[in-house]
Image (cartoon, rainbow, N blue to C red; front, side, top):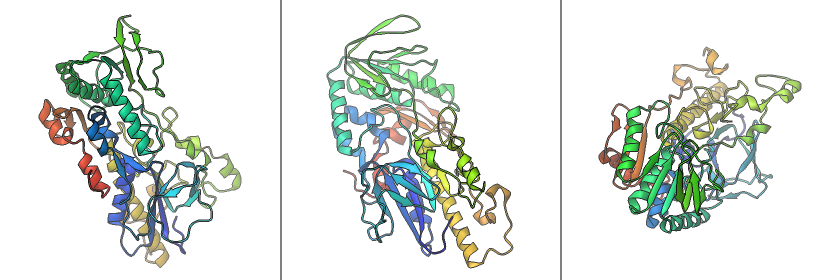
Length: 443
């Protein structure tokens, strides 16, 4: 996918865990003799460290750790740049941004394109993440707006006495834990429709049981195998300060509440793929075949996540130069920030291998290299065969307060009590790590 007469352009859409991991790996591993320019497209003015969002709801001074500027992602004077904008359409060799004129957060090198909404690429990494109900992630356009909503939600918590959280996944569990630890006199109730909290595949029952035990030790009322429809509360309106009498569906039991959180469900927005079509020179040929291509073939029929191969390329022969990682893809059975980071680094390594192979093809050094069928005809040897992404072993740390929580780690298994979670995550919720990763001094 590399043109002979210009710089190789890599576009990464999304500047969160997976996207930044990919960008950093590319910068670190790309040979200096390759003419490559990386463009990071991000809709926000700063990276949101959502892993730490619940701590900031109960500790105002912690909120400053959540929004990390993109200022130093790329070195000054490099050919790389950060463009602030929202991708509305993806085509075979370029993306189009939404109508608002994009702004560059870091100065560009070279002449500006004639169309400010169009960004060309030779390789593309889709790392747009997922949407989950706030306060886990805020649907905002700026860090200032996010901090304002966080302050407002913190006031809601401080001024409420009977708090109900619907949804006992990792988000709901951590939210309950943080609130109850910071405000032990408040009544906190967690309603979950399953028989176990954090009921994810590949995680042992001991981990799920310990999550419940930990919350109940601090006084959270955990109600399992129940659900409730609460007037006014939904995925779109996931934080509600209102007096409500909540009726549980199975038992008809009632609970009084003056603050409710909707903390269940993850969705992805992959509508930008509706414009993607194979190139006439690759895969299916002919204008008729191109026009007949259905982009829905690239998406999971239920979740709408992007279907990828083990190499993280789109699961279609026509797009060997396009990768999808993290929550927006189907690469991981249980998407987490750590799995997104691992996928981002794998995609970066594979892109570098593809660039090197294209360079060898151009300089004629590919003689006698055998074709690999699983590589869709790309020339390869063992040293440049694309890497298969292996989903990370089950790893989850539930930081329920500053002193600890519950964690399940590969090999070590479930760590009971405070020490394990505190050592791994609870102390600063990885804030220091990610500010360092963004090459920014921690506030």
